[in-house]
Image (cartoon, rainbow, N blue to C red):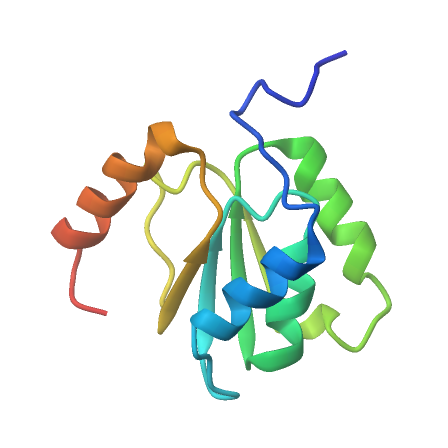
Length: 120
């Protein structure tokens, strides 16, 4: 059993922070959002309410299962695509906006990957 820290997890539990992040992202109903490290999906569910599609890239298999369970059978399920893998090592999906609550240690590699990739 792990403590949930194996992947540098720090889960967003405060709903006010989640709401503030979605508001600050100034999302449109037509946006495809890439969320890196969705964890248990608190931010993901808020994003799904506001946008066309969320592509969630999650490394931790336990979180992938948790996220799938949370949207299963809901109207939001078709709007969510989950990629199980490391965003730094995978082919980036198409997206308009990135929203991420990421561990500090991957913030630089993530930004460099975005800057070196093809224009989106």
